[in-house]
Length: 344
Image 1 (cartoon, one colour):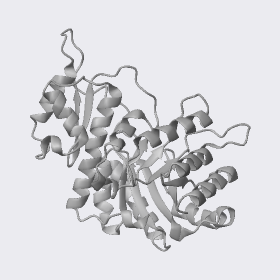
Image 2: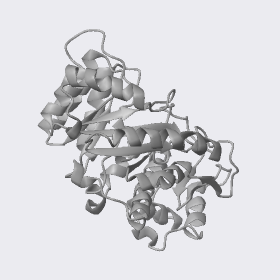
Image 3: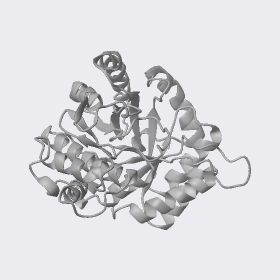
């Protein structure tokens, strides 16, 4: 259940998902605010989904970063749900414990337009999931939106996990929350975390740097609980802002780490992305399947051959997001992971 920002790079990666991965994945898209108003942001998002979503892909939509409109009858989540329903694209709305009554009504409307399911996302950038708060809120959710636990997935989001100390802190939180959640017939229980730093600008250039995938390590430590897997792909969990003309770079997922490649622009005419990609495809963490591992790997290998344009930040994000999704599904398959698809 990858948690993805609703940006160009992520949509390009999703557009290239092979059918074999579509049937094993439920991405949660966070709608990105632009400063032009939440209704326009919703309209832009639905168009991106319509242009990018592969056939048979179900997505979840979280509008928590958008502000509520100050007037008028239109609401972002309602607009998105109605447009996607008209286009035949299935979705699950995401709700949070302390959503306003108006937002909860939007979630109910969106769920009714689609398959009746929804996702309850616990935790945020400022607080860990709390089983006591969740239990207290369940009755309110039942009364306000007719929450049916058997039609609802729960995501326990611990946000940022970037060290052994973080793991030691959040593991008992996760275990306590999962133990509580499993007393109810939720459709699925998922643990989510992110481990990519907010910035990679301090990392060395001209050499790959390994960053530990602590989010994966958390899941490995609680996998015995029988929970589903979620991460923030190659992005930091926070929304953040776009960087103006970032240095050519790739965030390349391996079994335990991300390999961060940063090649600065020099005075030569040749774009550094070609040399960066050539360095990557000759490394020992290039997959044995080579360019056939994912669409993103094919694009990287093409640049290593000196073919095609060097791309931009959105392209680089798309290539490595594509690889990350394939890498995660490959790892989960090797771990004996129980598939989520049958639950939605």
